[in-house]
Length: 566
Ligand SMILES: Nc1ncnc2c1ncn2[C@@H]1O[C@H](COP(=O)(O)OP(=O)(O)O)[C@@H](O)[C@H]1O
Ligand SMILES: [Mg+2]
Image (cartoon, rainbow, N blue to C red; front, top):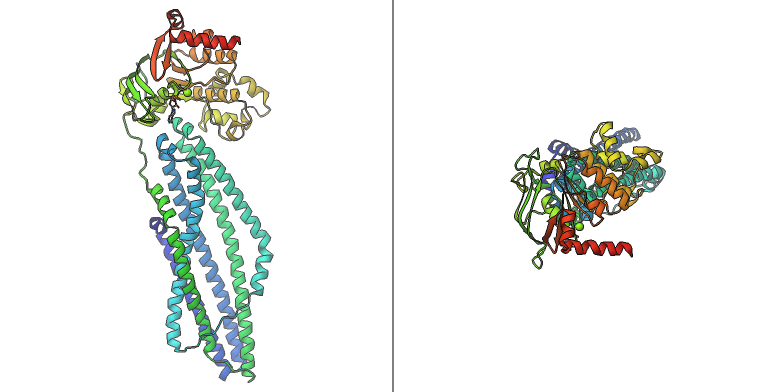
């Protein structure tokens, strides 16, 4: 946290300077009082008038200093928080999928919203307040020693004006606060959206775009709060003036009566004023220090995150796919109790198309996840053109492979943006992807066309439509390897057949398609079928070979067929 407290050293120094100035000005009040009181004992009304004019100038100067102090504090907080929040977010985004998934995404949201708010109030602002009160205390102590007076009396400023002023500005202040809170809401939803789409962000290498969008939203929130704080600082300043004016009115009147000989007062008034700068700050410093201590844990958590080593994208550059993919005796388990993949070996030539079938929970998705490097702690090796996938740069890996999952994540943007994922593509490419994925009819039907909004996580679209968007998203990325994990499960057989056919017709493309649609027209289109059973590769072969063999696949196929008949 200290690192961020001192991040903008120049601005911090200016803040501390103005804090000292404010404290000096506050303590100086006692001396003004004293001189006025002195006039009361042996001066004239005209001397009093001059002193009061000077007091008014003092009030104006105090207001200017106080306002500048709040302005500088707001600027300091704005800059510091923007830096801290950008750092924390960038570290969260820099994680790989595995370490990201170790925490619930809501935790990250809370970290970057609630925790930061707490740190802002109880750490940054608090420390500035402590400095101010400590400085006031020290200066006032020196002053009171110099005065050499030992009277302690209670405090007397009544704040009628201080109550009325916030009421006048209350509405405008509330409006500003509301704008801030709205922006905060939008920001939280956006961030939640981005974290839910983490997998998509990673596998499409769009960290930069997401970071940019995040930065804009982050700036909006902090800036609207900044505006709110400026107005409230102005209102606070006015209230302070009200307090001062009442104070001077009382003193002025009191002194006037002293001159008239109807009242006796002494330098004790000045001392009373100085007491304000001693007792108050003492109480404030002690309570606020407790707050700083209390926020330490949250601060440490944040800094740990902000300082966490960036998961640097190192490894072998691999920009093309030439020969094929091999799985060499791969073993993997999520937990010690059960082996999820057992001695899996495969050889997939470039350009070939494989269907992966097997019962639910047999390990099909896991097989693909290891290939995609979601998990790295497996035995054996998975190689692309003979290069271990764990040694290839992650960003390069996702330039070679695109994956479409059963559950499609949608950003709350237009269909077009969900297809391009915020990258620039030519109209021809977009049209082709829309056509191949069977989205043409939907786009034509919607009045907004490609610009129609999909709603939060695509709630305006059906499951099948979302899957088509996901297919278009994958096709436009145009990688040499395409992976579908039950990506057509929400589509009817005919649509699934048409889409899978158009994908399988792309010559150069290497495909691995997990499907539970055991429909012979679809399965016959593949070069081979990989049959997974209980984490093992049970059989591999063409549709005809496997049905003639009358083994595990044949029984699976028949069960599905019987289900269809029922
Ligand atoms: N993240 C995970 N943690 C623990 N177990 C998992 C995880 N993901 C999947 N599994 C388990 O691993 C087995 C294989 O899952 P999966 O590969 O998703 O099967 P399939 O895709 O063939 O339906 C299942 O028993 C499943 O419960
Ligand atoms: Mg699965």
